[in-house]
Image 1: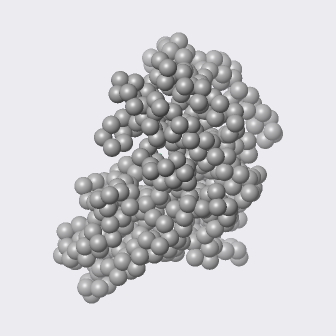
Image 2: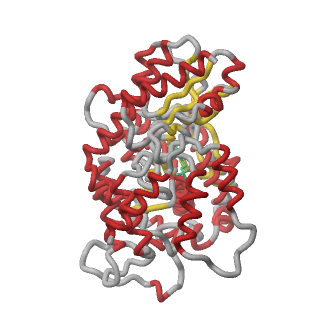
Image 3: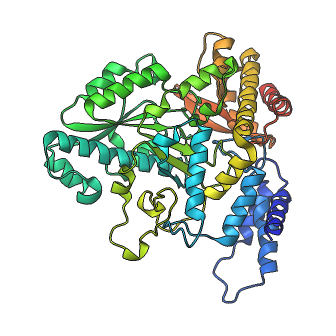
Length: 492
Ligand SMILES: *Cc1c(COP(=O)(O)O)cnc(C)c1O
């Protein structure tokens, strides 16, 4: 049965045959096919299928299916993950309470968290507390929520105050009781979703503070950081950009991370790492070719919580992220689903598996661990390592070509080609030297419909980013395609 489900959807995916973007005609036709109101009576399954495959699907983009869609960081869907995701939909298991006699799903989730920890070389004995989320944004919300709880509990203990749990007593009450004016998040080039998380959690977007060095916006100024941590009126969470979204570069290497850890311990701060894609640097082996990238996530085991994305470099379908923490009990103090006796977990003889509803945002939720589990088993450690190596090699080859080309400039500015390539992960940031061309660079590249790039801003002017994240990457084939398109645009 599973094979039939899989076959059907795999074939459905092949029906999609446009370029990286749908044609204007297909978009218009799909839009015109949408019903204005809900029909009184339903129609046959076959006709709904025809409508979806014939009208809607041709207006999709190739974000996941094409190896040459380099916008955002979309990843793709490995065959194993696609198979498992279809099983998830077909059997529609609700992963909410750990009920070991009712279903195996919570055991599989817990196991999949362990497999991910193995992939990222994080010690299970310390790190096997975490959960699956809808993506890195949700993981950042959980990370900052755990941090908020932790730093205020610490401050309350230091001051001998009775009120201390935000989850239980409320942020306003705890801050008031502690005579504090707020919680702040200290970071360098944080992803926009981290700022959003601060907004959601009552920390405030404007309380995400930049503590970067004057000569490099991604690196921490440790003196500035300590000054902020030492403030008497605030408690702090330090957020490490473990992979900055424009450049793919890292805010720390092992040595400064250890110094930041010491400062956080000294001042009772929580340390969170947003490793949505950067945590995958830990998949790489010992080869000197990738030593600089590996350094970027070195020491990450010292932080308190880690955000990771499933639907980016892990190549499982939307929506999927994960969250790890070293602190076994902190998430349940924030996310405890209070006073619902019917949701009490059952007992089992195995490991003590927490009920997902008590450590994450949702109650009822999708069995999104299964595609992760399937893909990890299908590729193993070395399969993921090889996949990432191909992505990095392609990024470096493209950067090398851009470096040599007089029409384009590789960003950030580097003193030598060797230095640029050495620091390159899976992102290529660049612009055209001619201002006129640069203003339209993204749309000119995307008009080719052979590849898709994201527009962004760097140093105050427009730039383009090629983010390589799909499992289908083929270095030689894709290098030829990308440079052909870039050369053509350069001549236009
Ligand atoms: C993509 C990304 C996010 C947000 O992830 P979603 O999966 O879109 O929620 C957060 N942080 C970083 C560094 C990212 O690259």
